Length: 217
Image (cartoon, rainbow, N blue to C red; front, side):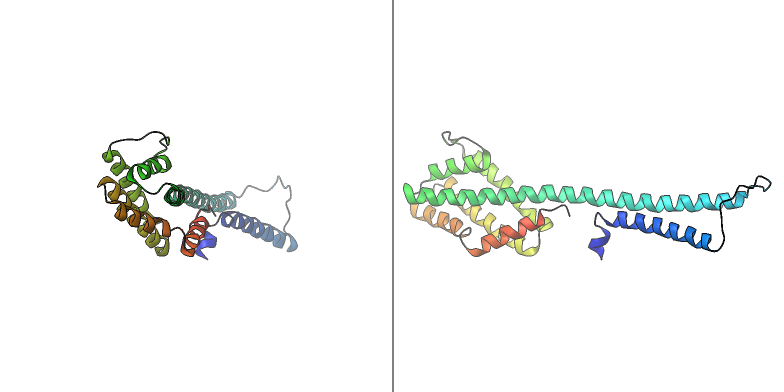
């Protein structure tokens, strides 16, 4: 019921109901003999005119309130959509990153430099041929990503939030391994843990659930 009241059709239905009610009242009065007549000899009833004006004002006020509520709800939905979409894009980038890591692992093996280049290309838009020899930049970028993923607790249900926290933790371990120049065996283990997160059925389930939230309805 609450969802219906906040829906886009509720104000329209209310307006139609008011019009139908008004038409029903007029029709009932006509059936009982009430007619619009021109009688210049009769004096205007200012009390009746005031009453009609008061009713018209009340109806207009109610309509304005419902309209304002509807507009506010739409604005809130747009704001939520934008924030959810940013997290969805970040999740999609993580998925692409994992696929590129899997491809790199199968072709040339893993090393910190190549992983760093992939990370900067996928998440920062830096061309693949360029390399930034500053781990502080890399660290700053992934901290921003982690902060963005943490916002999921306010935007998605608990199940999605927990899943994104797992991804954030795996990404954090991966970036720390690069920044600290971890041994190849440790780096490979961390990378594999990150890749596996996007290869199970749960990944597709979470993806569909997030997509279901990307709506303005």
